[in-house]
Length: 206
Image 1 (cartoon, rainbow, N blue to C red):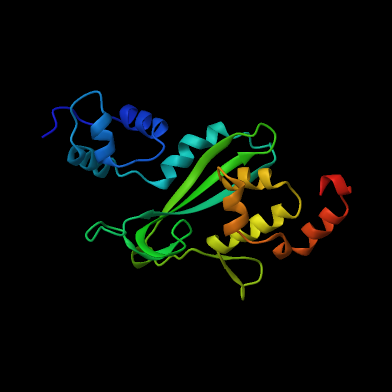
Image 2 (image 1 turned 60 degrees about the vertical axis):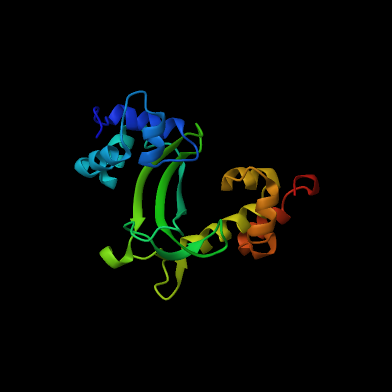
């Protein structure tokens, strides 16, 4: 049993420092003080963290007058070998390019178009059985529905029509333009207004 309780400061520092593993076990392995992964799990359950807490912390960091984008990221944490973890269910993974058992996490991030800052503002764990919500988006036309996954592909196609491959890869969070070329919608799938905008550019900028 852990002799030291997890703290918000320690957990925050861990999340900011790690880039691959975010589990309680990973934190227990690098904690400066003895800490069990079960103790971390109990601490997280006692905190009852909610998405509203993210916005409460983020609101003061966002200049309301600055032009911005809201970026929706639909990630699936691969749990193919887990049988008893809550929220694990079959869903499509863009990384695996197939349906796998995993935990779906939808993140909403604010991006300032002047300063270039990124601020997380909301998140939701995909759990249709509990809240009845899906990953479907409704636009102005109620007869048309779009999934976050297809929206990301459409965004990629639109940007490909107006920006360089390096810029597209950067906006999609890819380390290599090869991923952008191989696994995302082609430029010809861009909406007409983006194709027309590209046609108006000088040849050396297309």
